[in-house]
Image: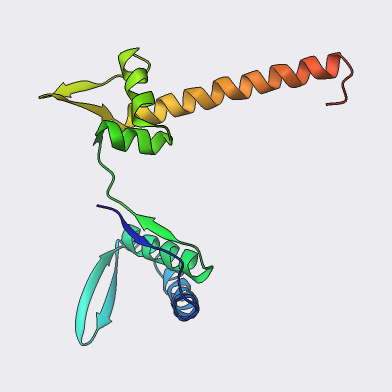
Length: 147
């Protein structure tokens, strides 16, 4: 289940700015280390380096007043999760699955889609759009339309 921090308050932004500044100093000493050790109320907490960098990024966004959403990345997605990832409706995604544009498998009566297949489809679609725009721009230049 995603966790969302919407519209950070001015106080939260100020606290985040101070935290980011402190974390940047810590980050400079992280080279070669796999974990960071925090001491909170007398307890030592070991945080993996990648998680530390994620915390720093979240705080940076909060400091800028942006909303932040954190969710778990699953390798297999439900049709709704895949539709959300592509920012399309679920019925549209189901049509993409039915036509074979995105592979899927059945688990019981439900379909599952690999995240990598969804991301590949999105990447391929962007490439097709880019090529189409390049073609149109070239045609417009050859016709002297000023583009």
